[in-house]
Length: 295
Image 1 (cartoon, helix red, strand yellow):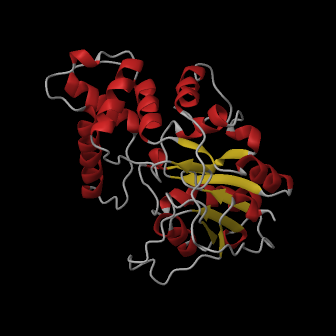
Image 2 (image 1 turned 90 degrees about the horizontal axis):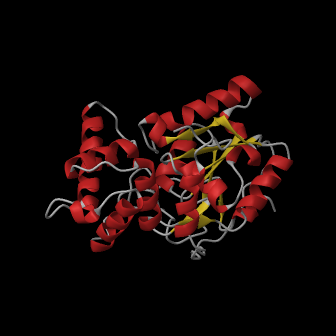
């Protein structure tokens, strides 16, 4: 499925469950003090999604194990996607099989030399449902399950900040661990597709497209090349905002960007002081509210 910079026909059915299953989430304050970065010389801003532009109840995208709650979510999502949970094989656990398939895909990718692999979630669900001998609307299943297991909500100030940044003539993009439904969050929850906010496809990179996840530097390659070749913008003129020292700040630092840590939600803030690559790593700035980026 194409990233939604303009809504193509047929997408509306996938927006409905996102709206129906989402409700306001407030960020939980952290103990960090803000030190907003200087914006002088910045010509482009790249954003992370989960835990940065959107509050994430689980803190990140990914197959966290919540036990029986995940299986309840799977069965509800299956029914919503046209399946019949009553026809599942005895003892079949869709949520467990889901995690197993993701782990197997990751292991296979690592065996091919991919250090930070990412799955294509529709392939995962196809394999899960084939084991159950059932065919359903896979995109609907993926959206229904994700919204039940990882609820999200726009971070306070999202629209204001993006519009202000674009209004000042800066280019904006996204580099995020994501799946096909991630771009749908914008039209579903804020009523505006990415393109109408000023995001260009060439300045955005999604992990499911690349088959690799952050902190892989490959995820940044496309947007940085487009900024350099099309606009003469070099890495030192690009600010990158993310909530994870390993997945966001480290690769941005190594690539010569201006990394800024978003520390606005305790659930998603990942300082990782025990990690050898993060122990002495620092960002160029810290913000605890998106609006501090434009103050």
